[in-house]
Amino acid sequence: MSEKHVVVIGAGIAGLSAASYLLRNGYRVTIVEQHTAPGGLCTSWNRNGYTIDYCVHWLMGSKAGTAMHSIWEELGAFNNKDGSRVPIVHFDEFSTIGLSDGSSICLYSDLEALKKELLRVGPEDKKEIEKLCITLKQLGALTNNVRSSHVSFTEYLANGCSLVGQMIAMMRQLIPMGTYVQRFKNPSIREMLLAEIPSDWSLIAFTMGLAQQHVKAAGYTIGGSLNMAMNIARVVEQLGGIFRYGTAVKTIRIRESSATGVVLSDDTEIDADFVISAADGHQTLYSMLEGKFIPRKFQKAFTDYPLFPSTIHIALGMDRNCSDIPHGFTPYFPDPIQLADGTIVDRCLVNAYHYDPTLAPEGKTLLTVLINTWEGLFWSRMANERPHEYTTEKKRIAEEVIGRLEHILGNFSQHVEMIDVSTPHSVIRYTGNWQGSFEGFAPTNVTLKTRLPKIIPNLHNFAMIGQWTAPGGGLPTAAKDGRDIAKHMCKSDGKVWTAVLR
Image (cartoon, rainbow, N blue to C red; front, side, top):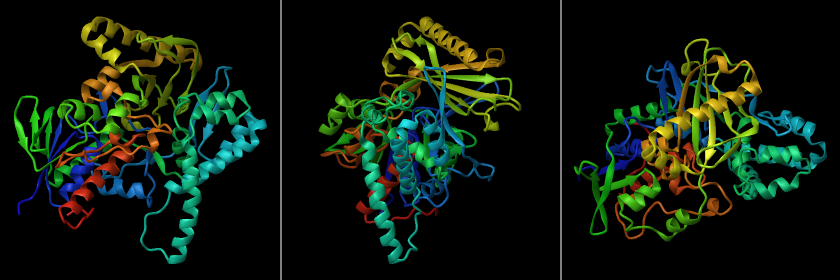
């Protein structure tokens, strides 16, 4: 029997993962990607000597021995082209949040330091602060479980009892942030908790990343996001995977309720025994499948579920070492910036990459500023219909942000030597992500309890994977999705599954 040929749509992390595991299990794989490089939104680009990074600020699974780390290792994510290992950086300070009264709160990685900081701000909330730190310790233990089959029965039972408590802690994280903050009396702590997380999102959006820091299980990968994606793609190529870059899929070809291949934008066709879409979920269901196979759960999701935002992403090349600036901070703007789409911005996320020398010339620093907006389609309309206005608005926003940072940091604007601005239109243009959302459906109490189908009823030889099938999104989810669908196919085809490179 000849090898089955699988077409994977999309060379983001989910698509790359699926291709990698399928290839090592004897499938032939063609990956079709509309962009000219792998990674999807896990990407970077070059401007005037700087490498502008878009995605990874911390990566779950950076700690050796954890389950997610083993998947990254299987995929080759931490092995550079020159044979070196990707260095991982862990921070003493996870984030610094600026407040409206001019003060700030530092979210330390160390739980004792974090507790001390929060008690400094709100001693009246001692009980809730201690509960929060206990929860962070439990969540860190849950995601830090070592993947091993060499444990005794006693250890297994002990781990099981511990996991029960950890899972209870996890379920408690589904509470909306707006409800959770009411447990605190101190207004500064309330403001801090809602500074980056919308009130209808679940608490886990705040706690999960922070909980990884004290166990050093979610560090930053030196070299940036595209470097990691390229590492994974290189393994796919070595295994015999065929990439078709710069090629968009127009439709998924269906015959007798089975996917039999894809039709490309130039009307050429690629035959397949199985098709996996790791592309945008809305585009897959409503365009590639022409709206003919939309499960009720997806109909509800695309109608009712809130999305992760898109971003105005401002990259600044600084002609000095910026190690005096916190690596990740959210300043408060007393004088808000109003975007052309109507969004009022009184905060943004600033990343100072002084810890990654690969992103800037020697002695210089890359800074990125992220401004959230849920008006992604506005930016595409403006770019397509009023291009001059679009260019002018990008310039204006950059100038206003630089001005605000000059006021907060001082000694800033005169050191800016490179400016690059991307918008939700950029996201839609390069990845097709619906409304420019960078991670699909937002993590709320409702969405996180929903299992969206990866196998579509009444449609054979087809599957969907990636962030649109897993509310909450994220790179680990994408990587695991690719692994899981390959394992599912092996089971269906009677193959003995392996994750080992052959």
